[in-house]
Image (tube, rainbow, N blue to C red; front, side):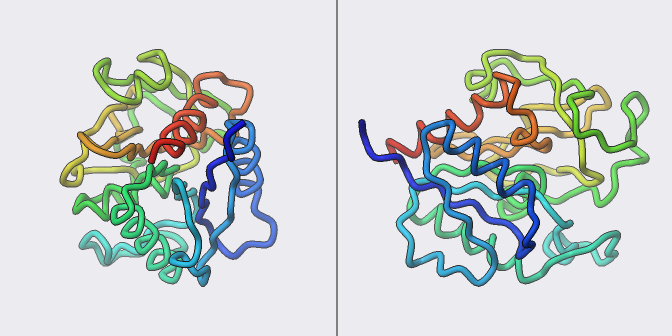
Length: 222
């Protein structure tokens, strides 16, 4: 059996970080080796095969031209994860962005965000849900549709921000029933997919496990 590819997982300095453990389990289950890389980690010193930018605090609004801070931000983490994305670009590594990570992929490519989406919700609930209550519709010609094997599925929802204008080189490939962006992907080249939900918290759903398997598969050939 070939060696399991090393998958870097960025995240905060929290001691109790459920997302960290959930992502690590999903990566192992998919055939990879997770390595947690919080702010301060030496990114240049590790030989990664792929990167996951996990969820967490809002991005600093200054990164996309806004000035109003609506929730907690972590500028140290912002800087660290932007460097992780730069290295991934330089080394042509696959990237999966989860929630905040999807937003960072978009901002790093020159896009911006809705700093708060509550006023955009007309059909879907404004309450956060850890369980899959929201419907996502995916473009049928997208990489994401090929990965998941379907164009419609349920997701959880823990966010109050979302992609607005998409960054250069990316396209919007998934929306919820209110039209709010739920997924983006790089148009060509290396695997770069951002999802607004948290697939790590939905391990019993095959469609969500396929995201991690696809990342690990892309890592094996990167």
